[in-house]
Image 1: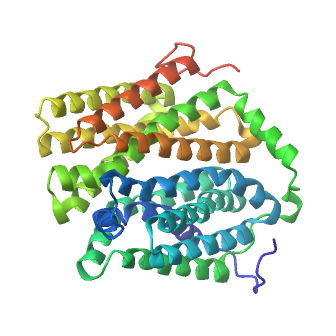
Image 2: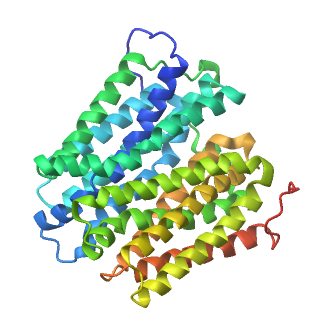
Image 3: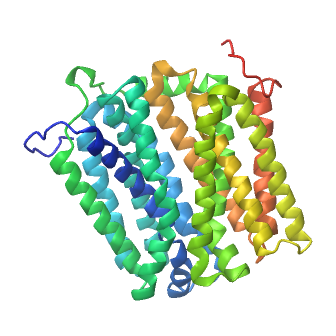
Length: 410
């Protein structure tokens, strides 16, 4: 695999680096969120017998997005960041074209899976490029700035999808994704240099790659928090997958659905920001363990109220916003705790972590969403059970010692 030859661009400024990392991350978020308002139209056009089959549009994408990261990490370390990204964006673009023209639901799902395969590189490459060009506090600064920009995407994406539907059929949403991917590809071709130093290129040896992954799996803390993240991510994907059915089919929000979806995305962002202010004082374990218990209890309350017919829109919406604000305080701390013992093999650990949590989360989220019966009760019960499974996993990982802010010995 050789990178397409171009004249070497000038070094990226901090502003352009932040913008490019945010744009790459947004490619994935848009691919999930922008088509949510179109799911009823997709189901209708493909004459789906089971109304819940529309959820596969999200699940097929996320599952392949997760598992493909296992391949992109070693490829990027061998062939370079730029070339791997460019070829992966090509896969995403082909998938987008197929989404636009797919004549049946089976080919459409295959095209969505192809989009997931291509988009998986954006997570791996964006992190690798920042690591190549920065270190220490500047790396943290660049990633924080990029995430600040990126967090806007889940808030506005469903609204953009709804605006497209006001003036065009649902396939134009995938046309918009195609155009966005072409713009990002052109930007990378023109401006992104190869950031991997020649002396750092690693030979592509399957035995060494497998040995690194096995070393990650021998770390109890990493495995425990990776599995915990998988259960929690299942809650998020379950919500994303079934949110349109809950808000539109049950609560009859219609075109106002993007507003509710965006408001809960803001709650997640607020939780993430609050975590950055509290974690230094209270520690990752104490903060994430407390908020995990709160998340599970809130989900159980939502399920009980829904089962009793008392979950009016504002009750459901308010409790969901509170629960997913807790999610914002859980996920980033779980990520940091999982990576804490594996600095020596951080690349392999990051790829495995992303693959397991995304693919496993997609499967768990798909099961949660699949239980939708026309009411939010099964969905909320699924969140509560996932929260309980996460808590059990953490108890095992920490050998029963929750809320402890003191450092662990190996």
